[in-house]
Amino acid sequence: MSDTFVLIHGSWHGGWAWQAVVRNLAERGYDAHAPTLPGHGPGAMRAGITHQDCVDAVVTHIQRHGLKDVILVGHSFGGSVIQKVAEQAPTAIARTVFLDALVLEDSTCVFDNLPRDYVGLFNALAEASSDNTMLIPWEIWRDNFVQDAPKPLARSLWEQLSPEPNQVNLDKPDLKRFYSLSIPRSFIYCRQDKALPPGHFHPRMSSRLGEFKLLEMDGSHEVMFTRPRELVDKLIEAKSD
Image 1 (cartoon, rainbow, N blue to C red):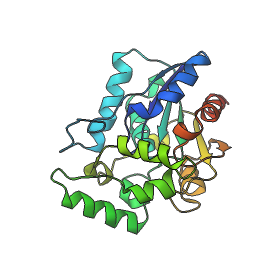
Image 2 (tube, one colour; image 1 turned 90 degrees about the vertical axis):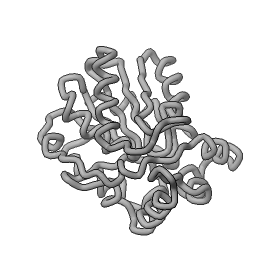
Image 3 (cartoon, helix red, strand yellow; image 1 turned 180 degrees about the vertical axis):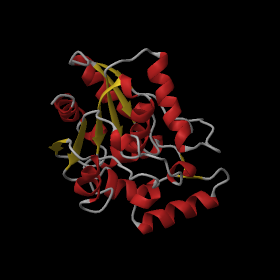
């Protein structure tokens, strides 16, 4: 049985987003790592960061810490990252867990999987920036990503977000090897998630995993903030057959 989780955050977030989850996992006897991806988090250099940079950083983290039998969890954009990490470090990964996460088809990009209005908005914001980055507008965050949080908490969380390097959304990773791996897969679906239209996360993207373990829970896209204990219950359930 694996006792080590590696938690990969989504767009605009950093490893800080998992603090409550890491604390609750520790209380349950599990070790957890929550690295911040390159170009993410306060004060990071964002210009020129690619999707592969994010992947390489996670692989390096796993190798540097000598982690084995890892339960690799990806939230949102982090799902696309853990697909490539599983390819590059398959012997270290016991299971991949997708938390309302993007599951890319081979040679497609993040923006291929988002509604056109999101893509247009995010590209416009990036083009208007000095370093090809974009930050989710407050109104979209409040109404679609964390609508189950009190407004003061939602605002506090939004103020901790950082602009996203837009290139990571345009890169099209080769994922042929991922789809040939025998590493077990789980998908956690949040029933009140409004970040994408109904059916986008599940079953549209979850079905790309082939055989997988499906778990469901209540909550918005940001359950690591609003329902961390319930999420930990699901993560522990997701890690085994």
